[in-house]
Structures are given as structure tokens and as C-alpha cells.
Image 1 (tube, rainbow, N blue to C red):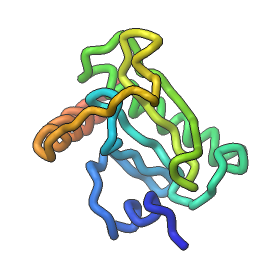
Image 2: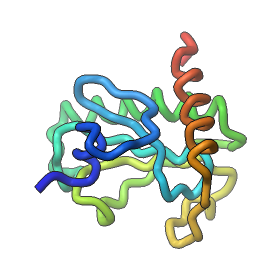
Image 3: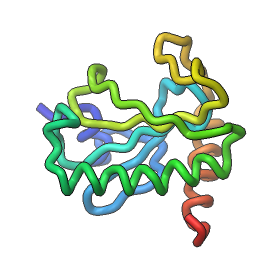
Length: 135
């Protein structure tokens, strides 16, 4: 059975897509800790991140780095934090979260409630930042 993330990659479930290539897909988390909170996944459905083969995992980090730099350009944050939990969806994924302090990336915190317009506006800002040649 396909994970919800595979259904997003296949277009069966809508998402606020940030970027994709032949191996990876990035989209806004719909239960964000902060505006700009993005998920990066391999398109290949693999449950546990440490079961991802080395080459695919390395490429995923390079892909995530580009997305994180774009998030950093458009979000009011000191850094973009990274977290790998792997419990909520059986599909390897990386959380990229704009943070200003250590406690900003605590997943037990209440999630933001954003409108579809706010999600789309943020996705567009990040996509535009990705076009910047310095990333």
C-alpha cells in the first residue's frame, strides 16, 4: 500500500510543492512548526531513512541543502533546523524547519494553522528563491 507521501508524489493528493527532480520531492508540511516548514522525501518509497542506500541518501541531503538555503532566504530565522523522526509516516523524510532557537523544533509544540493562501504564498517565495543562482 502506498504511503501518503507516495500519493503526493504521484499527484493523487495535492500538496504545496516546492521542488522535485527524478529522485526527490519537497513540499510544505501541512502541520508546520513554523512558516516554511518543508518535508524532503525520496520518491522511492522506503520506510526507514537508514534503509535508504548510500547514494540516494547522500543525494537527498544535497537536494535538502538547496531547499534549506532557499527557506533561509525567505523566512525570518537564524537557521534552518533539520530533523528526522520517521515515525509519523512510513516513508523516509527530512523536516526542514526555520528556527530562531533550540525549542523552535520541538514537535510536541502546537502546530500552526495556516490558510491555503498562506501556504501557497510561502511555497511561491521558496520556489522563487530556488531560482536564485547563488543557491
